Length: 267
Image 1 (cartoon, rainbow, N blue to C red):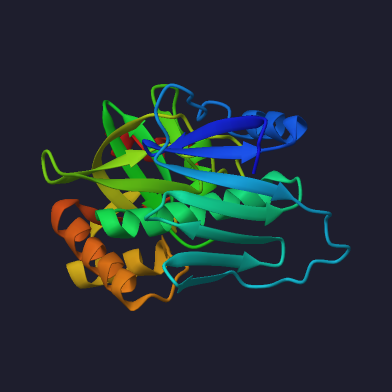
Image 2 (tube, one colour):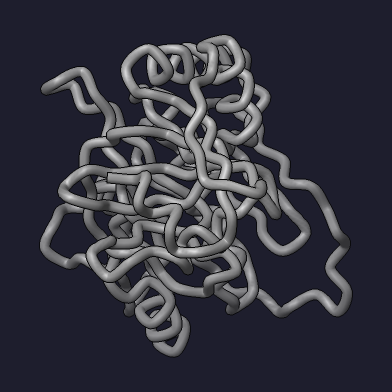
């Protein structure tokens, strides 16, 4: 594609260059990923985006992620994409909306992280006193609520999807901010910090933190990790990453009432 316009979106320290022939779409992406646009770092991967006419009634399809002939093929009702990780190139066909590219980027990052010991997690994330805290749970567990209650000394990384990277320097993990917002409709800050703890949320009559067995922690963690491919090797990688994470990061249950006092427990 002889693209005239391009933008580099860097999430989790992973720069991905997007090419488009439509400047208005590039501007839309610049607004959508404001704070995560970086033109100074050489991209690790590149995608050409071909804009198509929106479908009159796109079916509510599940995403399909398959490896064929050395290329990942990503498909849903609103997009088709191909990606050759060895060549570092890919192509996306979608209409001019930010939601499709959001989904493609999430899928691509899950595939990258599965090879590197990390993962995307359904969780809110925040930094306090230089350490990151994660708050995970199913829809309605309170991820957005606890984010909304955060005091002024807290930096919000996300209220929906946390980017977890293994830190080989100290054998720990770092949480990175993401532009993937939930009900709070607020993009996270583009920064990171070592993870101090992961809490699985439960709303209740009092604020308290309870221990969790490692077996339960792994089960809960696996339920909340985002991963879309059925590739057996990568699924095993994700499981091993979850086990290693639970060995190295405290995982506990946080029961809370919807008021700011819950943050007195999180330091």
